[in-house]
Amino acid sequence: PAIRIEPPAAIPSQDTRKRPPEKPVEELDEDEEDQKTREESGLARTGVLFGGLINDLKRKKPWYFSDFKDALASQCIASWIFLYFACLSPIITFGGLLSEATGKNMAAMESLVSGFVCGMGYGFFSGQPLTILGSTGPVLVFETIVYDFCIKIGWDYLSFRFWIGTWIAIILLFLVAIDYSAL
Image 1 (spheres, rainbow, N blue to C red):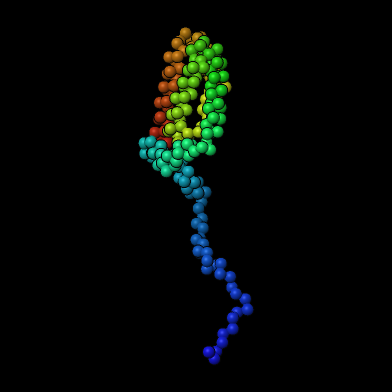
Image 2 (image 1 turned 90 degrees about the vertical axis):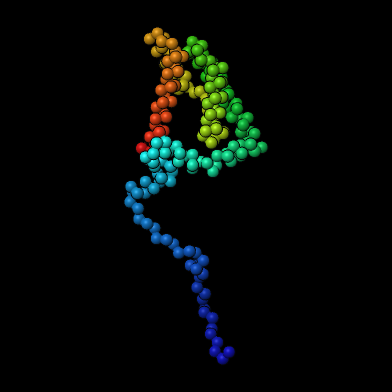
């Protein structure tokens, strides 16, 4: 060719062509941003009976099976052993203290059974199979106060304790039904 085009002295950067154009950031006011954050985290009020629970189940469904499958890996055996003793020792300790505090109405065996039932239920329904559950100091204080109250009034401790648990279950079910955690 008779005409030659000289190359440029400096080559412009190709980065702008490689990156997609940035979308303009929408200006959200504080209330809209807060609402968007709540919806993404699952804490937005649905207005449907048990809507929050249903949304939680939908959000956790993709990981539910893998949580249990991952817990069966050989690397988790040390965690199993640790959690067994981490859950067992306070249950037995506080069970013995509960025996003294409640006139032997609740003792180590009852604490073991409740720890097993609650631990299995929580593990299956929360989707987190490796969670520490058990009796603690505040539970011991509460049970001592309830037992002393029942003795003073002349009521049967275990019957009263049953109704405490029943009412707590009813209240919590009601709070779940109306998405109270979203308020």
